[in-house]
Image 1 (tube, one colour):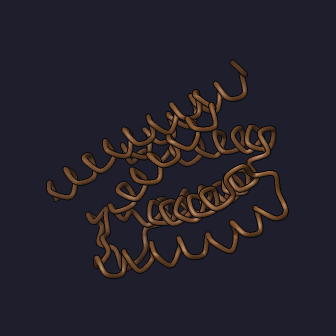
Image 2: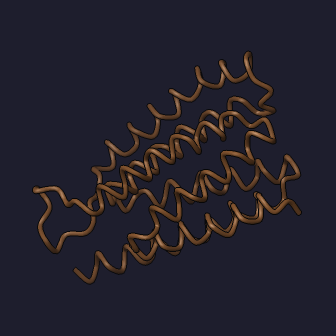
Length: 187
């Protein structure tokens, strides 16, 4: 088992677990995890996933800032926000559609084995990441969906350790949804 992948798995699990617990350390831990997977995906020629890790690094920096600096519109005790369902669906559909031309680019200019699936999952993952930075509880439901698809995809590619990581991510997303929902109900 490659030590780079093992390290990336362990650190990324810790980052998502910290996010589910709303611990501020989720952001720097997540940054280390995405740097490790950026390198791993480069070695595997998964350029969409590699690009996703680079963008995650930026989003993690924004999330760190966002969670430390509450917006003036938020009340002191308010920790979460929610979408209107119609807006939620619109954002998901538009984001998935953005993935299609990116998939075309990946299919013609990279060695990506599943360029369209990778690009749509990349875009949906970015949307879920942005929702996380804004503390939208719906981020966890989108993560559950994306992580299950990634689990299947990496299993199909015979990358069993990374497939296991995404299965754990899906379970952690379920945990995060339950934890955040419980905290919302407590407020």
